[in-house]
Amino acid sequence: MTKILKTLCVCGAITFLLAFAAIFLISSTALSPSRPTLIRPATWIPLLDMNLTKWGTYLSFSHKPDYNGKAPVDENGKELVPAGYNKDPKKVFSMSEEQGEPVLHVSGELYGCVFTKQEYENFDLKLKIRWGTKMFGPRVGKLKDSGVLYYSQGEAGVDYWRAWMLSQEFQIMDGHMGDYWNISSSAADIRAYLPEGRMNSIANAKQLFLPFGAGNTEGLCLASGHDEKPLGEWNSIELICYQGKSIHIVNGQVVMVLKNSRYVDHGTTRPLVKGKIQLQSEGSEVYFKDVEIIKLIAMPDKYANYFN
Image 1 (cartoon, one colour):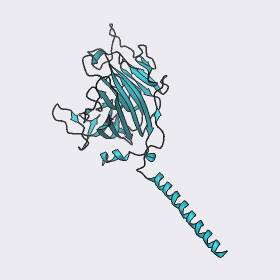
Image 2 (cartoon, rainbow, N blue to C red; image 1 turned 90 degrees about the vertical axis):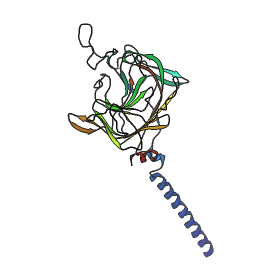
Image 3 (cartoon, one colour; image 1 turned 30 degrees about the vertical axis):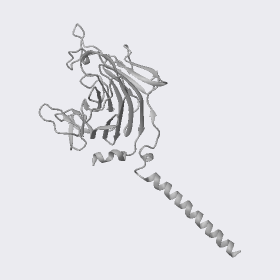
Image 4 (tube, helix red, strand yellow; image 1 turned 90 degrees about the horizontal axis):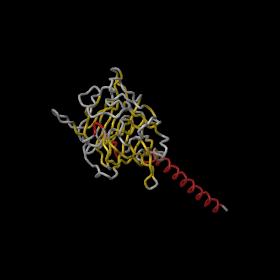
């Protein structure tokens, strides 16, 4: 009997130790900062549906080729009124299906945007874009142009084209996917080469951070690579944002590293780390699909070293 009791005690102890080890391993895995489950604790959320239920719209004007930043006027010199929020008389934005997937068509005829009804702070955004063939107004004879505007705040129409909200721009343009533009009074620091004379600065992940946007001489920084697909093919875009830091990725290639996102408000600099997402209508026909987002609770390890 004593021998049997001793055997049972030993077996019980072993079982307890194995259970404790399992709990420890599970806890360690959950707490490990390198685990993707910690970086992205939720599932990807699709943002497009056939009724654009997660988006609002804003449209300004069908700008003329000689537009100079001033409010457009009619033949009598009276200022024109923008189409405004959630009014689309020319059907600039429309939805269709391709192979069972919702696709957003943007004609580009009026300048404006679709914008998410929800604000986002720390996130990973993925989408695909494909160019159409139509061009309008100031874009005729020029490069096709659109963009993803993030950390968007306030009212639309505060920019040069009177079409968008204060925001940071992930440029989408022929040969320029991933460029940076500041919209209105936004600014950011970007790893880039120093500009020289009339040359624009070019992003490079090995360079020091330079300031761009409001309060600085440069509001444009060119992407470090040109990885676009031929006309008619889909390009994959990814935008990673965490605590005012962001990464622009085009077809799997990092083309820009930014930090210290901010804006200037009546002379005071404030953080710009949260806001809506806008997809631009900018004189060029473009299609968007597979637009999805996921919350981040840390900068993914793969990209964290860009900020060291």
